[in-house]
Image (cartoon, rainbow, N blue to C red; front, side, top):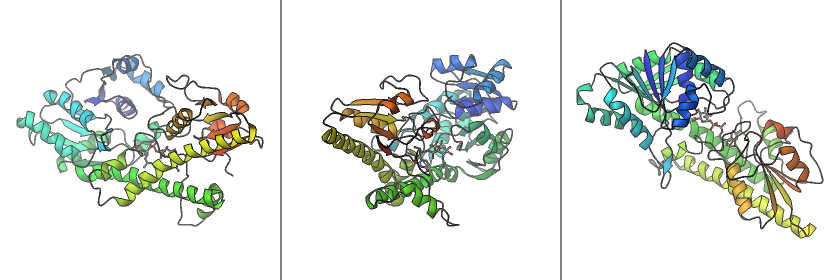
Length: 401
Ligand code: SAJ
């Protein structure tokens, strides 16, 4: 079987590699020639433990080839980004462009699948697009939506073991898509229709966003009340039916901080909790930046000099190099913009060089700083000692018990 993966990003590339390992002849397509070149040389352009060895194996065996253009195949997978535009409205133009690129190649019996997170109705809209240009294919190809669920950092395991939701345009399409995924997924493949599958993906990430907003709201209340929020949540979670997540400096990444807007932009009147959760999580980042600015002013008043400040972590979550939609990056930028020439040391141990921020080694920054701001709970930071002589703002629970 031949398959084309449109998009070799954080999800498309790993899925293409795993499918290739399981005997599918893969063409991985990306508009970025550098990504194509690196992939064909067996170099992974993303950071994901254990993935590069697998890439080298499938490139060497010829099971995976990268290209800037798709080739005639039996199945096509849209795994491109769906960011938002304007006032948080979903931008499906990449899915549309990828679909348009494969339309001329489609033939009877082919499978077309969207994996990209998409607003409800996207699969139907793409089917319409396909049949407008190729009316002779109506009822002759299989169309389905199958969202990914993997957690960056644990992709190899989760791609194989997580359950998947598969929603076809009709029963035959669902069956055909299930047949494809069952080649490498060991988790259960759950049947549904494409609209439910689209909404399911948005629901999963919105659910997590709402739960994190609850933890972040508690952190604001506890700060005012003089209660250690980490201890509080730990104790509340001893209840057999309570499972509160952890507060942080906001919610980042390309999924949880984005997907809920796909619901709120389409159903603004009905999605009050989802919308409020987004606002709370966004506000938490703003609140953290204000806390740092206040600590800097207090230091200056007390010591008659500007403080040296270490901003610890830029990634959107612990132990990764991904800075997309990162609240830590937002807070650091805001602090630098308002710092009035104070010395701000920016730390991100998972990134070698950054085009905007000059990065400092974490131990050096911790030694030199008067004020230390923990934004991302990287493992390295957890080994640093608590030092009473420093002002420590621990927004991500580095020193929680
Ligand atoms: N975060 C907290 N507190 C927590 C957990 C997370 O503040 O207790 C923050 C993180 O620091 C980060 C953000 O939330 O800024 C998102 O991180 P995450 O680990 O919750 O999720 P992602 O964005 O890496 O991956 C999510 C996952 N979805 C769910 O857990 C429902 C993943 O399974 C999806 O595949 C992925 O989104 C996606 O691609 O949609």
